[in-house]
Image (cartoon, rainbow, N blue to C red; front, side):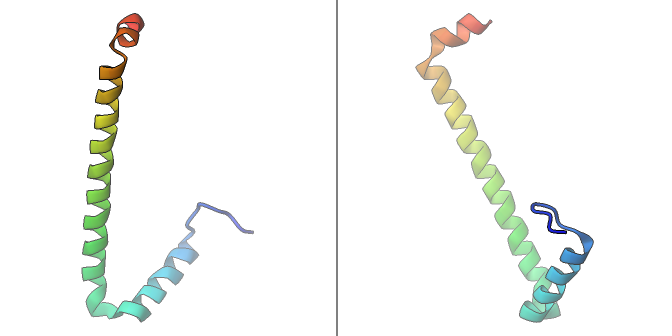
Length: 69
C-alpha cells in the first residue's frame, strides 16, 4: 500500500541506512546539525516574511481592520 506524505518506520530506517552509506558514521552528526540550522533559519525567515505581509496589509487597509472590531 502506497501512502503519500507519511513516513513509516520502515522508510525511516531505509533513509538512515542510505544516509550512513553516503556520508559515513563520522559525518552524519555534522550533516544533521547543518540540516537543523538550515530548517531553523528557514522558519525564522518565513516568520519574518509573514510578519511583514501582515503589517503591510494593515497599512494598506486600515479602514477594513477598524470595521472588523
